Amino acid sequence: MAQNRVLSLIGLAQKAGKTASGEFATEHAVKSGKAALVIVSDESSDNTKKKFQNMCDYYEVPVYFYGGKEELGHAMGKEFRASLAILDEGLAKSIEKNLRL
Image (cartoon, rainbow, N blue to C red):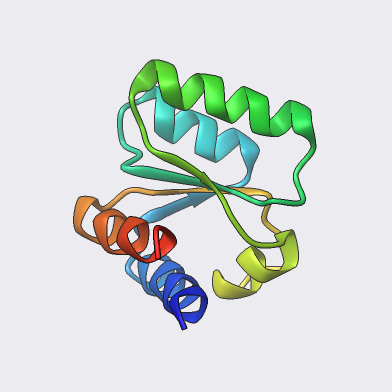
Protein backbone atom coordinates (compact mmCIF):
# COMPACT_ATOMS: atom_id res chain seq x y z
CA MET A 1 0.00 0.00 0.00
CA ALA A 2 2.75 2.46 0.95
CA GLN A 3 4.54 1.63 -2.30
CA ASN A 4 1.53 2.65 -4.40
CA ARG A 5 1.19 5.79 -2.29
CA VAL A 6 4.82 6.77 -2.94
CA LEU A 7 4.43 6.30 -6.69
CA SER A 8 1.14 8.22 -6.82
CA LEU A 9 2.68 11.09 -4.83
CA ILE A 10 5.58 11.17 -7.31
CA GLY A 11 2.99 11.36 -10.12
CA LEU A 12 1.20 14.18 -8.30
CA ALA A 13 4.48 16.09 -7.90
CA GLN A 14 5.18 15.60 -11.62
CA LYS A 15 1.75 16.97 -12.59
CA ALA A 16 2.32 19.95 -10.30
CA GLY A 17 5.67 20.61 -12.00
CA LYS A 18 7.53 20.03 -8.74
CA THR A 19 10.02 17.41 -9.92
CA ALA A 20 13.39 17.29 -11.61
CA SER A 21 14.28 13.95 -13.16
CA GLY A 22 17.29 12.44 -14.80
CA GLU A 23 20.80 12.52 -13.41
CA PHE A 24 21.77 16.00 -14.60
CA ALA A 25 18.52 17.74 -13.59
CA THR A 26 18.48 16.00 -10.19
CA GLU A 27 22.08 17.00 -9.53
CA HIS A 28 21.32 20.61 -10.53
CA ALA A 29 18.25 20.72 -8.23
CA VAL A 30 20.33 19.49 -5.27
CA LYS A 31 23.24 21.86 -5.88
CA SER A 32 20.97 24.88 -6.42
CA GLY A 33 19.14 24.18 -3.16
CA LYS A 34 15.77 23.46 -4.81
CA ALA A 35 15.55 19.74 -3.99
CA ALA A 36 13.60 18.80 -0.88
CA LEU A 37 14.00 15.04 -1.42
CA VAL A 38 15.96 12.83 -3.82
CA ILE A 39 14.91 9.34 -4.91
CA VAL A 40 17.39 7.09 -6.71
CA SER A 41 16.31 3.78 -8.23
CA ASP A 42 17.42 0.58 -6.51
CA GLU A 43 18.51 -0.58 -9.98
CA SER A 44 21.01 2.28 -10.38
CA SER A 45 24.70 1.45 -10.43
CA ASP A 46 26.65 1.51 -7.18
CA ASN A 47 28.60 4.46 -8.56
CA THR A 48 25.41 6.48 -9.15
CA LYS A 49 24.06 5.61 -5.70
CA LYS A 50 27.34 6.62 -4.04
CA LYS A 51 27.46 9.88 -6.02
CA PHE A 52 23.94 10.91 -4.96
CA GLN A 53 24.45 9.70 -1.37
CA ASN A 54 27.59 11.82 -0.99
CA MET A 55 26.07 14.85 -2.73
CA CYS A 56 22.86 14.71 -0.68
CA ASP A 57 24.81 14.28 2.56
CA TYR A 58 26.88 17.34 1.71
CA TYR A 59 23.88 19.51 0.75
CA GLU A 60 21.75 18.03 3.58
CA VAL A 61 19.00 16.70 1.32
CA PRO A 62 17.29 13.41 2.29
CA VAL A 63 17.99 10.64 -0.23
CA TYR A 64 16.20 7.31 -0.61
CA PHE A 65 16.94 4.30 -2.78
CA TYR A 66 13.59 3.03 -3.98
CA GLY A 67 11.91 1.16 -6.81
CA GLY A 68 12.97 0.18 -10.29
CA LYS A 69 13.90 2.57 -13.09
CA GLU A 70 10.81 1.62 -15.07
CA GLU A 71 8.58 1.95 -12.00
CA LEU A 72 9.85 5.46 -11.21
CA GLY A 73 9.64 6.49 -14.86
CA HIS A 74 6.09 5.17 -15.16
CA ALA A 75 5.02 7.12 -12.06
CA MET A 76 6.29 10.28 -13.78
CA GLY A 77 4.73 9.48 -17.14
CA LYS A 78 8.14 8.83 -18.68
CA GLU A 79 9.94 5.69 -19.79
CA PHE A 80 12.85 5.14 -17.38
CA ARG A 81 14.12 7.29 -14.53
CA ALA A 82 17.14 6.38 -12.41
CA SER A 83 16.93 9.50 -10.25
CA LEU A 84 14.53 12.30 -9.43
CA ALA A 85 14.22 15.21 -7.07
CA ILE A 86 11.03 16.46 -5.42
CA LEU A 87 11.08 20.26 -5.31
CA ASP A 88 8.06 20.83 -3.06
CA GLU A 89 8.63 20.63 0.72
CA GLY A 90 5.10 19.36 1.55
CA LEU A 91 5.09 16.64 -1.11
CA ALA A 92 8.60 15.64 -0.09
CA LYS A 93 7.47 15.18 3.54
CA SER A 94 4.50 13.03 2.46
CA ILE A 95 6.66 10.86 0.22
CA GLU A 96 9.32 10.50 2.91
CA LYS A 97 6.68 9.46 5.47
CA ASN A 98 5.45 6.72 3.11
CA LEU A 99 9.00 5.58 2.27
CA ARG A 100 9.63 4.92 5.96
CA LEU A 101 6.60 2.60 6.35
